[in-house]
Image 1 (tube, rainbow, N blue to C red):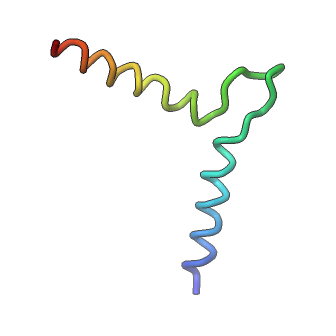
Image 2: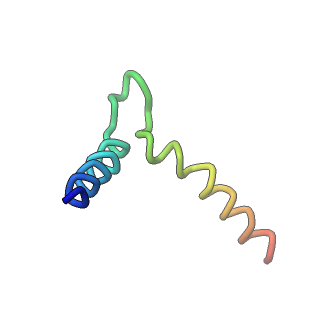
Length: 50
């Protein structure tokens, strides 16, 4: 009974964090801002092994 409601709320949340808020306010969307530090860390770890 509650599963479809929880799924809908989760889907809306995931969809909203990828929305661009406009280039005047910020140049990247929230999802990119969250993932960039982890991607840089991953890239540093992979280059250190070479």
